[in-house]
Structure formats: structure tokens, C-alpha cells
Length: 340
Image (cartoon, rainbow, N blue to C red; front, side, top):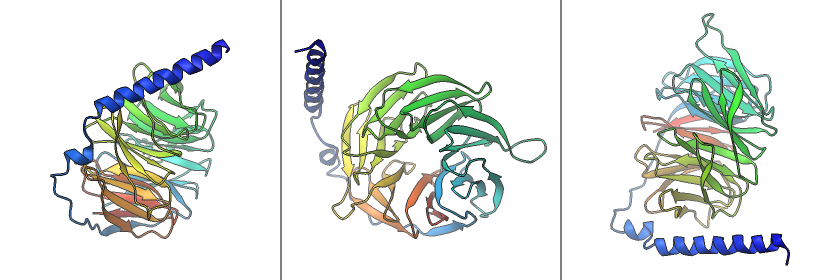
């Protein structure tokens, strides 16, 4: 037996010890704890606005922190900033690469970012003196496609990539400050914690990882999914997060318990999940599916309590406003719909 085999065996032993310790800690289940809670009545949301203007599949959207404006990215090669109240387009930004996979709105409302198969995160300033939108920075350094990006502030952004890493960038210098390595598959999604000190990433290795923004280290790894994780979203209080996967399940992971609390699935749902988001209270988990629907789950009970059916193609992205008053879904049918 080689030294390597001995180390492999030791790693497996340690893994099973961790599994046993987690089982011992799991003295109850979320289902048991919430058994006395009343089930939610059926939740019905109506389409209040339809945002028309993209000419091809929409791949990503992100709300501004004011809960009024949002940015969307489409493979028509445009980044559009919308006023969701009036449905007016505030900016239509032509992109150098139309193969865009993600977009983000800075918390200040001064910048938007996007990226995709060009491996570059492009930052656009919306508040230029001339009034036109222009590229203020192009962050090049990833060796794979850009799958997701989120601003920490006007000078820092975190990106995830098909090169199996995430990076924290200094926008002013255009250089990566920290690289987050550890996934063994394409990183598909990231979500910042409410305090912006940590973030969680989901990847094609079927694991989600919790990272410390400050020291660049992976603090926890969460397994359980049987296929690629396409989407992650922090719970509003920062103590848990949800994942959506190609295995047709969403799952809720608790950071303090270091394990899965609940799985959201039905035998009738066979298709993958593209996007997940929580309501403001966290009681509802919204998930976008390949079958053109968006399902609403009761986070505590694991029951499906509603469906948003209005798109004619895959729901590729969704987001809940910071004020919790509306949800936006984006689809391959080229439309964005705003529900409440």
C-alpha cells in the first residue's frame, strides 16, 4: 500500500467521522420542529409589469438596492437598465461580447457589471458627466467563462467562473485581490451574506462552499446534491442558504448546524433549477425551473405553495426586491415579468 493510498484511507476515515458527528448533532429535523406551524394558504402572485425590449434569451437580472431599477443581460448583446415602475428603459448598453451570462447592480446604483464567455467582468459607469454609459473597467484574469458577479461596493466585486475559482477584484486597479480556490467543477453561482463578510458559491462538483471574503479561505463545504448546483442564495438573516440544482431539488443548508435542513422537490418535477431567491422574511423560497415555471416553496414545511406560470420558455433568472415587495423573473422567451 503506497503512502498516497494511506492518505486516501485516512481522508475517508475522517470524512466518515465528520458524517457521524453531524448525525449525532442532528437531534431533530426542520419538519419536526415546524410540525405545529400552520401550513401556508396557496400563494397567488399576479404579473404587474412585463418588460419588453430584449430580442433574445435573457440570461440574468439583478435588482438595484432601491427596489425600483433593475439590470438585465441578454444574448442580443444588450445590458438594459429598467425602471420597473414605468417599464421604461433607462439605459441600453451594447456589449462587446453578446455571450453574456451574468449581470449585477452596484449597491450605490452608480455601476452595473456583466460577464460571460469572454472570461471578462466588464464594469459600466451609469453616472458619467456626459450622460452616456461607458466601460469603466474590464477585469481580465479568469481562464474560464464568468458565471456570476456581485458588487461588495463601488470598488470591489466578487466573480465566479468556469475555471473553478472565484475572485475578489479591486476595480480601481483592475487586479484580483484574492482568489478563492477549492471547487473541483465550474463555479456557477455566488451569493453574498447580508453583512458582506462571507459568500457562498455553488458549483458543478455538486457542492456549495462558504468563503471568508477577508482571508480568502473556504470555511465550510456542503454536500448532498446529486448534480450541478446552478444557483445559491443566502437566507435573509445570513445563517443559512438555499441551493438549486440540475437534480431537480432545492435544498436549505444551515451554516451553524453545518448540514442540510430541508429538500424541496416533488416527483412530478423532473427538470433542473436555474435560480433561487428568498422572500424578505425567508418563509418563501422561489425557484426558477427549466419547465418554464417558477415554483414557490414554504421554506419551513417543504411544501409547494404556489406557481408563477407566465413564461413561454425556461425561467433563467429571478430576484426579489430588497424591500420584499416584488419578484422579477427573466426568461429565454426574452421577457422579464414583475409579480406581486
